[in-house]
Image (cartoon, rainbow, N blue to C red; front, side, top):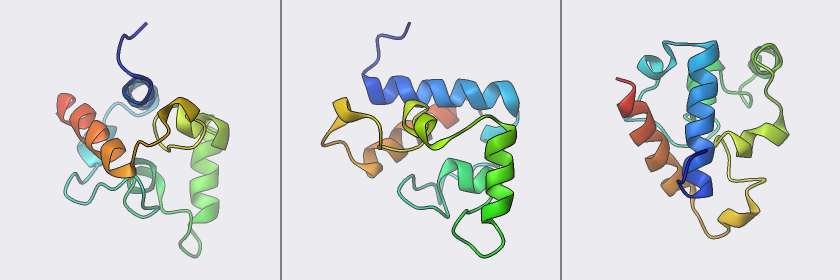
Length: 107
Protein backbone atom coordinates (compact mmCIF):
# COMPACT_ATOMS: atom_id res chain seq x y z
CA UNK A 1 0.00 0.00 0.00
CA UNK A 2 1.30 3.44 -0.91
CA UNK A 3 2.09 5.99 1.79
CA UNK A 4 1.40 8.83 -0.67
CA UNK A 5 -1.49 11.25 -0.03
CA UNK A 6 -4.86 10.07 -1.40
CA UNK A 7 -4.75 12.03 -4.68
CA UNK A 8 -1.21 10.90 -5.46
CA UNK A 9 -2.18 7.32 -4.61
CA UNK A 10 -5.21 7.55 -6.90
CA UNK A 11 -3.05 8.73 -9.80
CA UNK A 12 -0.56 5.95 -9.12
CA UNK A 13 -3.47 3.51 -9.13
CA UNK A 14 -4.77 4.88 -12.44
CA UNK A 15 -1.34 4.74 -14.06
CA UNK A 16 -0.85 1.13 -12.95
CA UNK A 17 -4.31 0.30 -14.28
CA UNK A 18 -3.37 1.82 -17.65
CA UNK A 19 -0.05 -0.07 -17.60
CA UNK A 20 -2.00 -3.30 -17.29
CA UNK A 21 -4.35 -2.67 -20.20
CA UNK A 22 -2.27 -0.47 -22.49
CA UNK A 23 1.49 -0.72 -21.80
CA UNK A 24 2.43 2.02 -24.29
CA UNK A 25 -0.13 4.56 -23.05
CA UNK A 26 2.33 7.05 -21.50
CA UNK A 27 4.15 7.60 -24.79
CA UNK A 28 0.91 8.73 -26.45
CA UNK A 29 -0.03 11.46 -23.94
CA UNK A 30 0.93 14.97 -25.05
CA UNK A 31 2.33 16.48 -21.86
CA UNK A 32 2.29 19.99 -23.34
CA UNK A 33 -1.49 19.77 -23.72
CA UNK A 34 -2.27 17.62 -20.69
CA UNK A 35 -5.08 19.19 -18.64
CA UNK A 36 -7.09 16.96 -16.32
CA UNK A 37 -9.88 19.50 -16.01
CA UNK A 38 -10.50 19.45 -19.77
CA UNK A 39 -12.45 16.71 -21.52
CA UNK A 40 -10.35 17.24 -24.64
CA UNK A 41 -6.86 17.09 -23.11
CA UNK A 42 -7.18 14.82 -20.07
CA UNK A 43 -5.35 11.48 -20.04
CA UNK A 44 -8.35 9.39 -21.06
CA UNK A 45 -9.49 11.76 -23.83
CA UNK A 46 -6.01 11.83 -25.33
CA UNK A 47 -5.89 8.03 -25.31
CA UNK A 48 -9.48 7.09 -26.15
CA UNK A 49 -11.23 10.18 -27.52
CA UNK A 50 -13.08 13.19 -26.15
CA UNK A 51 -16.53 12.10 -24.98
CA UNK A 52 -17.98 15.58 -25.55
CA UNK A 53 -17.13 15.76 -29.27
CA UNK A 54 -19.82 14.69 -31.75
CA UNK A 55 -19.41 11.04 -32.57
CA UNK A 56 -16.81 10.46 -29.86
CA UNK A 57 -19.08 9.68 -26.91
CA UNK A 58 -19.79 6.19 -28.22
CA UNK A 59 -16.10 5.59 -28.97
CA UNK A 60 -15.10 6.72 -25.48
CA UNK A 61 -17.94 4.72 -23.93
CA UNK A 62 -16.92 1.55 -25.74
CA UNK A 63 -13.30 2.05 -24.67
CA UNK A 64 -14.32 2.70 -21.06
CA UNK A 65 -16.59 -0.35 -21.02
CA UNK A 66 -13.96 -2.57 -22.57
CA UNK A 67 -11.44 -1.37 -20.01
CA UNK A 68 -13.86 -1.73 -17.09
CA UNK A 69 -13.94 1.95 -16.23
CA UNK A 70 -17.03 3.64 -14.89
CA UNK A 71 -17.67 7.04 -13.35
CA UNK A 72 -17.32 5.70 -9.82
CA UNK A 73 -13.78 4.59 -10.61
CA UNK A 74 -12.66 7.85 -12.26
CA UNK A 75 -11.75 9.50 -8.97
CA UNK A 76 -10.34 6.37 -7.40
CA UNK A 77 -7.99 6.04 -10.35
CA UNK A 78 -7.00 9.72 -10.31
CA UNK A 79 -8.75 10.71 -13.53
CA UNK A 80 -11.11 13.13 -11.80
CA UNK A 81 -11.43 14.97 -8.49
CA UNK A 82 -14.97 13.72 -7.95
CA UNK A 83 -15.39 10.93 -5.43
CA UNK A 84 -12.27 12.02 -3.55
CA UNK A 85 -13.96 13.80 -0.67
CA UNK A 86 -10.77 13.76 1.39
CA UNK A 87 -9.15 15.85 -1.33
CA UNK A 88 -11.39 18.89 -0.88
CA UNK A 89 -9.57 22.01 -1.96
CA UNK A 90 -7.27 20.25 -4.43
CA UNK A 91 -7.35 21.63 -7.97
CA UNK A 92 -7.25 20.18 -11.46
CA UNK A 93 -3.96 22.01 -11.93
CA UNK A 94 -2.50 19.95 -9.07
CA UNK A 95 -4.02 16.78 -10.51
CA UNK A 96 -2.46 17.57 -13.90
CA UNK A 97 0.97 18.05 -12.28
CA UNK A 98 0.69 14.73 -10.45
CA UNK A 99 -0.22 12.96 -13.70
CA UNK A 100 2.61 14.72 -15.55
CA UNK A 101 5.10 13.41 -12.98
CA UNK A 102 3.66 9.91 -13.15
CA UNK A 103 3.84 9.89 -16.96
CA UNK A 104 7.40 11.19 -16.98
CA UNK A 105 8.43 8.22 -14.78
CA UNK A 106 7.24 5.91 -17.57
CA UNK A 107 9.15 7.58 -20.41
